Image 1 (cartoon, rainbow, N blue to C red):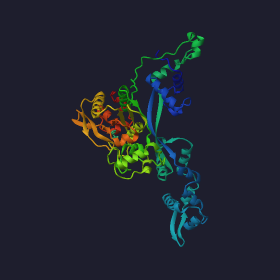
Image 2 (cartoon, protein in one colour):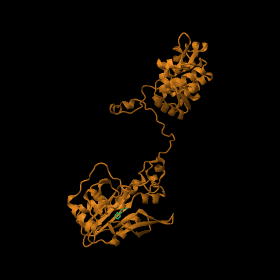
Image 3 (cartoon, protein in one colour):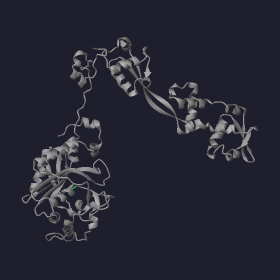
Image 4 (spheres, rainbow, N blue to C red):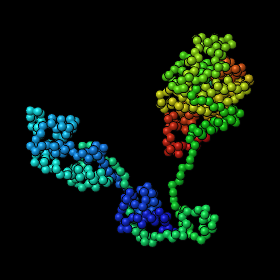
Length: 502
Ligand code: PHE
């Protein structure tokens, strides 16, 4: 059914010049240009029409140009105001308001260029005398003015301006009266094949184009013909939709923790300094709390503090717990009430410690923010995989074993732990995995056992294993990405081409 066409296609073909001449898509009255182009594309696939593309230069009046069009060229109005005597001095022109001070230079330059006036020095300054040419020409319509009028009335392209008129375009452009804009134009014409079948194109009213529920219900469809679809056309295979690699990783990790009996936690992105730092025994003059590292919020001005824990946290900071010495400074509750964008998800672990009863296993995968200069390794916004195990019977070796197992499940065979320091943990370690391709150990986050200065004030009296790991890093390692920004560029081609990593 080669020549069976969609009604839109028939309509378009009939609207095209029958002799194969081309016509711009904006000039096909029965369609808007978008529809015309789409239908033309179908027809071009069937070799019934040809589409040409051309870039053209549209001439447009500037705002200034529109004002000049209305008021006329300044040199013209100047000459019109010259009295019978044929001469006038500049001062008079200005004082009469015929010309503004800032227009003087342009007006004089054009009078001279056009040979419309001559100038001499008089007692009161410059005297302007109109020439014969000036008097005659300033009365008639100038070529530039004709062009301006045309531009204001219809779309004119530079390519359609006759050669001998191009100089006026240049003049108007220089005077900032006219500007140009490149525009893509598409033209459609019938091909020979198109011209040939044009007379045979009819579609009987009987043909069903769209099957509706009415046609089915009434049985009407049985009596009529369906328009044929060409189902064997070759089309580009579509790349299927795919989850973003970060999302894939987050879902995999979520599944691992849920299977291990963990409960998923949630907490606010805008957090009090109390939960982000103080409850984690981070001293108030700790550099991580500095403006250079932490985003402080203008609003809300103050975060609310959990009354119940303030005193115990204060004592831990000032004097320690269970015989430790604390930081030995005066703790300030106002400082703890400063709202921040949480710098780590460990703030949520602190909140949960105050809320749960042991034993408990809690995790979350969520965002954290730091005031970092952005580079291939750092973003201001990133994700952490946070977790705590609160249980009488757990120890440091359980922590190492769990993390090792966790990374094995993600596909990293060799895991090691490097001693580290965090104000809130003791012991503290940083898990690392071996990258064979780089022959190098790569750090993935922090972990440890919460200190009693953290747990006791929040009412927990058993060991708490804790970790806060990068979500982006393992994705980068598995995908061989060196620049963390790649993950956030939303480059659709990269997303389509990236392998499913999990
Ligand atoms: N909060 C730490 C970080 O952001 C990681 C961490 C979490 C360390 C829990 C120890 C315990 O780097």
